[in-house]
Image 1 (cartoon, one colour):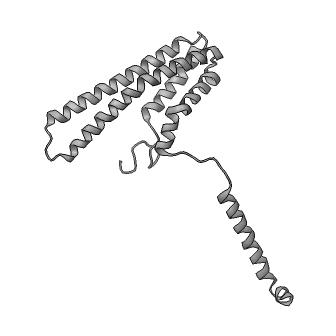
Image 2 (tube, helix red, strand yellow):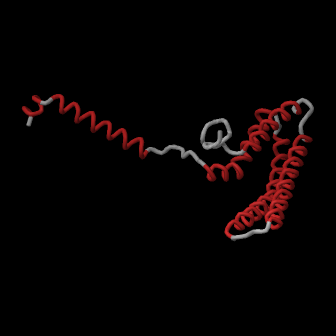
Image 3 (cartoon, one colour):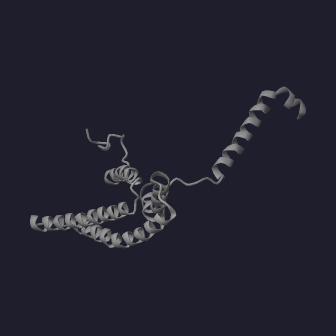
Length: 178
């Protein structure tokens, strides 16, 4: 066997490289690493504690909120979340009902328009509550925090309005639109 190894050093080196690369591959496959959340999983985390913690960090780091202001924000945030939850549930239920109409062969325009009007009213209520929440949050800022608050919150609201990033490029038009 030793004569065989001496005569085939290149094969032994290749074999060692393969064994080491397989060991490295297994290590990286099974090593613990943070799981990147995507889609609805990431969205639901952001709506829960994740978004609240992000907001607190932003208020503290970018705007300069004190611990007392953060405590007020916590109370306001809990109240806001409790108010918003049923509004979003109602909106979702009405949208579900609207799109279930697609299963019916003939739907009167008046029925479809009624659902659309209700959905528009629900969305108006949601936007009104969000506006009120941010206007109340602005009231706890000190005068020197107000310019930073206005700038940061405007950026956050633009991101909220834009919604989650879409596939198909950064132009916001989706994969099949020109």
